[in-house]
Length: 80
Image (cartoon, rainbow, N blue to C red; front, side, top):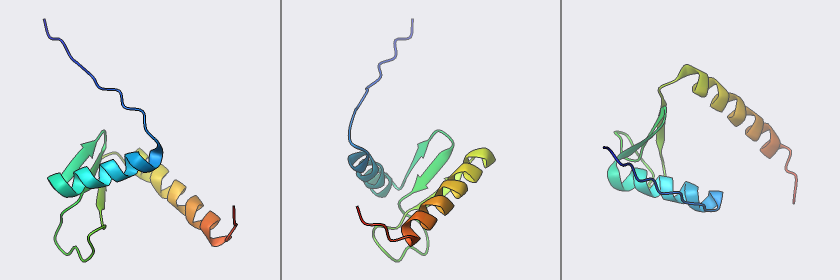
């Protein structure tokens, strides 16, 4: 019988982003479901640069839409 153990980690989203970035840089790349995050690639000019490859067209379209919305919100220069 195969027993699988899973770790459930609850953390603030800022720490999760930092963890994913660090893992991608240390291991060269990581795969999350239908997304591959590359920490090392040809032509890299800055240490904190990542490259993302989408394996699912639907997820790519959703991320494009979300990125477009975020850029529009940032352009409003709203202070919190």
